[in-house]
Length: 403
Image 1: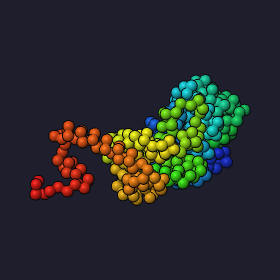
Image 2 (image 1 turned 45 degrees about the horizontal axis):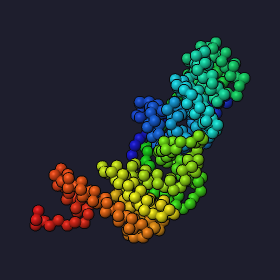
Image 3 (image 1 turned 180 degrees about the vertical axis):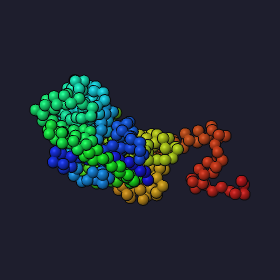
Image 4 (image 1 turned 180 degrees about the horizontal axis):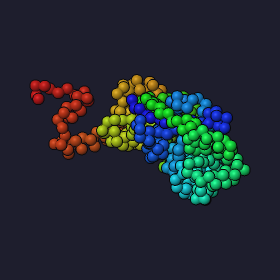
């Protein structure tokens, strides 16, 4: 079990009612962790907190939340899994506004996301830097501490004529609050309004292999694409890796805007293949997991090549599933009963019978010949205990009198 620390601070409207909470993530009770410190930490935070039911424990069922975003989180697809109705994407003041970043902001805005600007100091420099974005910004968080008063009034007058809402950031005293209300601010944030509250969350999650197996079952049950998307969205690390995988292998002119689009363009058979690959590469804790993955892929490709045209997808999955028991502690029969795969696949994996049996046999013979050759070439390097374990795991009894 892991502990995640989240600092939340209330943001109120001009009637002093809660509008939203700003979330700041920490890796300890004291040390601040920027939400977008790195792609890895961002994906982890989405997984552990903000895409789960634990979010409701932090901000309530209906409240919105501000989260900081930078060029990395905007351009790498990490945010695609967020609920656009609950999160306001808070653009950091030091963001590097490349053409790619601006393009992604426009895309997310078209999808229905709301944007805010962080620590806007009302300077000419800031006005010039964000000029191209103002049509896509919903809230400007104007830092009343960093802003010069005359600049603040002038910039407020400019934006008050637009649809953009203005938030007074840095409201430390009652006088600040009253002055900002008189100036016409829409929202208020600062220690006078609310002091940051540190929330400690114990994070637990369902074992990854069970998540994948359940998803495979959903696909095999022919559930709707919407149901598929809903389940995948609840597994943020899975969503992130799926989007990342899709972006890496597919070269399309169209813009990917949702998981539904990814699922539709990939197709269910290709999605199934990817999920089984994910099981081998991400779930296994065995040292040989990479080699097992390569072996399973070679076996699957060999069986796919042997199969009739109508059975090629099934043959590939049968080959992949035939080695899946190697990364699970549970019995392979129990595993196959859980996912309820096609009868031909199940028959092969459990009983080594059916239309793919001869193809599997040929693949296993080729594998054993290769492994036998490698073992004999490297026999002197092998550890005695590893040899004993391998033989006994394979059902070979050692004669104790001869040892």
